[in-house]
Amino acid sequence: MFQKISFLLRFFQYKFSARHARGHGIHSPFLYNFIRNVLNEQGRWYAQNSISKLYKQLLKSTETLTVTDFGAGSKIMKSPERKISDIAYFSAVRPKYSELLFRMVKYFEPKTILELGTSLGIGTLSFALSNSKSMVYTIEGCPETSNFASKNFKKLNVKNIEQFTGEFSEQLPIVFQKFDNLDFAYIDGNHRGAATLNYFYECLKKAHEKSIFVFDDIHWSVDMQQAWNQINRHPQVTLSLDLFQIGIVFFNKELSKQHFIVKY
Image (cartoon, rainbow, N blue to C red):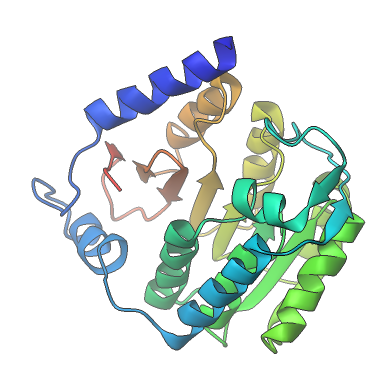
């Protein structure tokens, strides 16, 4: 009960503080263009329709998986035996955010994308289908979940995804051998503050000025919120955005050190 009340308080604090839904009052041209052309972009691409169709199919699935949790687990699904429909509803990237991830990759055109937490592959597909020239490296701790995601990639005939299965800490050194520079990172799947900070510092070793890191569930717990606060205050982070569900950080030295709570 305390955790639920605490979460609601963080949500209402966000609602009260969030601004700049349309970019009004923003003096940074970079951020103004991001809000107008990415956050508020209304056009849909054929690939987004394909992902949306798959997501709806997953919500109706009667299949089950035996899930291995290496992180904080789910607040709702306590049993390791979980329906695909429940995983899709409670854990997979929701359409609103999968479309945002799609638009971000379409807009910034990163060549190397790292995803920590494949789940059913909705976010992974959003990255891969947005830009066929990008290479998506995705890590999933649970073998059964990873295998199921692989089937979804084959359904949509996606070729620019390389999967890794196992604990993030064990797989990251293997993945990092695949590239020199990390353009885009999506960090999800553990939901523990200390682990999230560790992944941030590890990914930072491969980051450059144009890198973009996205963190999921930044207000999932007090622990995660503290980790997010530490990340956005890091000296290498120049611009950070809090959209409540996700946090986005940029490292571009041409930008002033600023933090925005943006209504989305």
